[in-house]
Image (cartoon, rainbow over all chains, first blue to last red):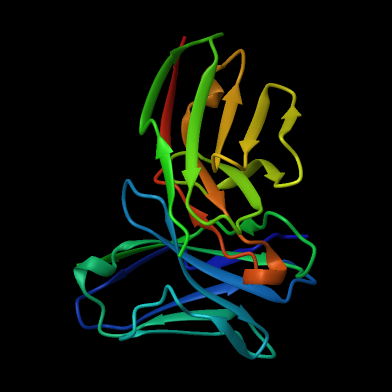
Length: 114
Length: 115
């Protein structure tokens, strides 16, 4: 089991460009979570998805950010018109669902906006 | 919503000594409390967790205690080693059934173990 796979590991974007972050959950996992970690800070919840459904997006900024988890393929976190404040590490985690405890994080995508 | 406070923000200990990190939470409905260790530039890794029906849990040199009445929980690392140096995060959740296991994290504690 390859674990939670995120790509790219590092992403550099100029202000105003779009950033697409990908997350492939562990095999058999149908629940995906996205967290953002600003430098020297803790992780902040952004969004929780199941296949084809957004369950909780209470931590997602209302503008420029969107997430999806299609029936086939990885989950995508999309940031439009990036700004310097979007620079952070974005971690994805997956879980098999009900009855589970802690989940496993991917290695993260470090987004730098220049 | 849930708020998790973590103290201290930095902790320096001599190798072989114990390290204690404390967290408080605000949501009395939280019932699951994991601890994560994050080394520089790497992913957070789950090291131990505790549920609200248990007061204490131990795994080798690591132990976690929970006081539901006071709404605080602590991580204890005994006989610290240089490889314990990392940032440690506590977190709280209402559990999967109530909240899809959404975690609220503390601000982190940077632990430095001096040889």
